[in-house]
Length: 228
Ligand SMILES: [Zn+2]
Ligand SMILES: [Zn+2]
Image (cartoon, rainbow, N blue to C red; front, top):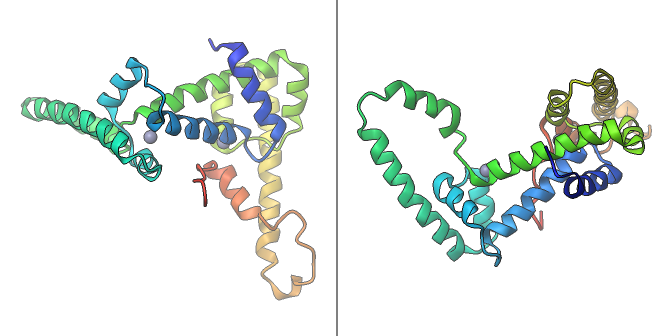
């Protein structure tokens, strides 16, 4: 279960701010906070240090940590992880009968790269998604706000649907989602039609930024780096 007092405030705030997917907004804020923590002055809790040593980071998070400029901090973490990784690989590759297992491991996890930051982000987002489900059932103003919202990206809508068995909530989430996917689809269509010279003088309406919003609906909003 989630900690209601800690988790409801950021969720309520993100939904009050609106946008095409408040859960993407929360994810990006959380990710930025973790990036700062991993390389900031704060001392990492021992459990976190163990996780970083074992998992390292995926390519995306290594790149973001590298960009943040604390190269000594990142080098120290990477060095400790690298020593552990070499020891683990040595053990793995020397064991003769593990071919099938390693092939599976390569398909499931290794290609994406194991990542301490992704793991932590995933577990925090799981809690926020449970919070959305809890709020929708227990907090009438939130339910009304959700039902009148612009919905979520497809992946986050899927995650919310997977987290609830409440038929009324599922129906509402699906209704909000399909209605808003169709809204963005129409806005995107008008965006393409505006390229026709015969539509030059017609108003853009809400379609000027329809392409980035359609991409966010379909693929989620990726983290925006500072200064981009
Ligand atoms: Zn999203
Ligand atoms: Zn990652």
